[in-house]
Each structure stands twice: as structure tokens, then as C-alpha cells.
Length: 356
Length: 192
Image (cartoon, rainbow over all chains, first blue to last red; front, side, top):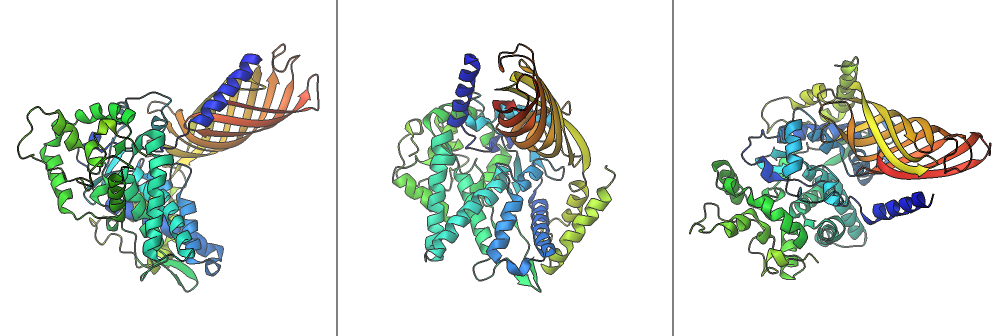
């Protein structure tokens, strides 16, 4: 009796102390050297089907004219989002129409054993959820978790934005406030402090999600309109309007806490031999040619300058592999071009890094 | 394929059609020429009924330490592997053998988990919520409750995050020393 009660108390305390705050992580390096079909067309088709289904349900309810455009977006988010996992992401990781890595159950087992966060223990919240597969969208490798971030965190950012607008802030000020708040949440609750992983690529997806969701009802050319008593899309959703190389964590590296980094770095070193392969080099050169700028990037640079987060470049694959090589080439085959590279004066070496 | 995929596909097409037309959908205009919308409706919207096994281990009152096996009936596209994660929703049942007695339950649940690639068994539950009716017969001489065998009928709510599960239940003693008494219970464990 006493033992049972004590066991229950210990279990409750353990459950309360840990939470799966970091939902799904991804490892784009695992897919290096593997061909993937571009999933942008099929993802667009799926998203447009989902959006249309929500709009049809609103139309069939007979309440379309009672709803504001923002109410319609709320309904859209409610129907697409679930607790930790979201409908489009579950489809992406299962549909045979989507080209992804890992592609088979055997590869999935291998992925779980080898992905960047695998060197840890069972009580680590970061390992409580499955690592997200990698897909290719408009020539950019992303984890399927980015689509979830686009909708989920993008939805929260939209809420922050709308609150700020209601308080009288300009669209620019409201955007800034939403992104700053999002960065703070990622540094603390969702990422840095809790799991020791601050994903800058997730932040980029969050921003783009917010911009898309806000743009459905606001701005010069809203994406939704009430026509003849029914809410309709004014244009198809296209992920290619939003995805950038900064969504690829192999290009826009995560920032890790010291303990996490000590376990991740050896895994990244295992990919150094692929860094100079033709496919990887070609992709990174292509990324470098695509103009990448975002408000998130500038906020991250500001946080680096203020010492709130370490320089992300120190966690990049070039830094890992360059630092390991005894005789690095005078002119690296792949010049480090991470969008965050050169941001401010950094916060010392990665091994001493703290996310504050 | 299931018996009603055509009906489901037709329904979704009809639901989506008005909006797609209104928006002059050109989602494939920058694409590879394949009609992905039709492909999705044919491959992913057509579902089949499937049964997946469930497992649960827990420490609970009044069951004490127990192990439950059960099943969940749901509809999923047959081509989905579900070895990373799938959304299972539908009726569930389970039989639990515990140090404090045995119980049987039936209810409804929504579960996101992954199944084994070799057997129709959900080997890990990421998130789950369910409600079930429970019939429990406690063991005579079990320490908790203290004296005699009892039959309890009640309702349990179950919630799982990242494999860790919590249950809360209310049971009425229908046979035993305190017949008619209500018992509040609950437990913590793994699975669903």
C-alpha cells in the first residue's frame, strides 16, 4: 500500500517535471546523398483540398455570412491542427504520393538510431516524439515538422499579431512583436532552455506561416473572400511562395545548449565525408544563390549581438567539419554561407554556448 | 481497397468542388502536369477499416499493477505504413490483468501513435485521449481494496502524452462488502 502510494507520487512528479515540449525534430543530414522528388505540387494540392474542405463545411453550415474572415481562419486552424501532430504532417509522413527519407520501415528504424539527437537517454523529452522525415519542396530539403510549424506556431504568431493590431500597432510593429515573442518562446519553453535545441529553421517556418495566415484576411489582396454567401480562396495556396533555404536545418543550423551539443557534434562529424559530394555541394551553392532575408533572421542576428544566443554559425556543418580537418583547403569547396553566418560578434565557442 | 472508397472520394470531390471552382484553382499550373488532387483523393482519401492492437501497463487504484491488451478499430488509407505516426480514432476495448484483479473496458479514443512494421500492434503512443466504460473484479484478499472481492462498474478517462498515460475513473461497487459505494480511482503508466 505504502509502496503503491509512493510509486504514484513519484510517477506524478516525474510526469509533471518533464513534458514533450519539443515536439518533432528532424535530421536533414540523414537524407544527404539520397534523391527525392519535389513534393511541392502534391503538398500544394493537399493543402488546397484541406482548405477547400474547411470552406465547404462552413458553407454547408449556412453560417458563412455570420463569420468574419478571421473567424474562418480560426476554423481553418482548428480543423488542421491537433495536439502536437497536425493533419498535413501526418499525411506527409504516410502518403505514398510523398517522396521522403526515410522511405521504408527499415530506414525509419535506422533513422531513429542515427539521427542527430539519438545520443541521449529515455527521459530526454526531445526523444519522446519521432524524428520527422525529410522531404524536398521547391528544391529545398525540409523536415515535415516545418509544415506543422508553418500552421501551428504560425497560428500562434498570427494571434500575437492580431492582438498587437487590436492595440493599435502598425502592421510592421505587430509583426515585430509577434516574431520577438515567438523567438522568446522558442528560446525558452519550446526549444533552447527545455530541450537544448533552438531551431532557427523552425522560426523561419513560423514567420512564413504567420504571414500566410494573416494574408488570408488582411493586406492589399486577401487570400479569402466572401462571394455570393460563401467563403472562397482568391488564389491557390502555394508552399513555394513561403519556403526558403532557411527552412533546411543543414543550411540554417540549430543552436544547441552545451550538453546537447556535446552529443550532437559527433553525429554531425559523421556527415563530413558527404559535405563535399557533388549533390550536397550543388544544393548548397543553389541555396546560396537564392536571396534569403527575413525579419526572423534579423532578430536572430540581434539576439546574437546581444549575447542572448550563441552564433549559430558555430553549430554549422562547415564549422564542425572544418574544425575537424587537420589541413582544411585554402579555398573551401563549400564556402560557409549560412544566412546567420557573420551575424554579430557571436558569443564565444559553441562548447561554452548558453541560450539565454 | 475498402467497400466504400468510391463513395468517400465522390463525397470529398463534391465538398471541395464549389470552392475549387470559385477560386479558379490553378494549383498545378506551376507543377509537373500531374493531377495531384485526383491522386490524393484516390490514394489517401479512400480508407479501409483496420484493427490495431494496443498495450498498456500501469499502476492504478483499484487495479494495482496491471497489464492491458486491447484493440482499436479505425479507418485509414491502406497504403499508409503508420510506422512513424498515424491518427487512430474509433472504438476501443481492452482486457487488463492486474495484481488487484481483472477488468474489461470498452470505449472510444483518438490516438496518435506508430505501429509495428511486422504486426498490427501500436508499439508507441504519442498522444491519446479516450473515455471508456470499465468493469472490474478485484481479487479476494488483494491489499487494495483491503478485504474481499468486489465488482466495480464505472467510467475512466485516459490521457497519454509521449507514451506516459494517466487515467482517472469513477466506479460503483455493484457486488462486494460495500455494495453501492462509489470509488474514485486513477493511475499512471505507459501506453494507452
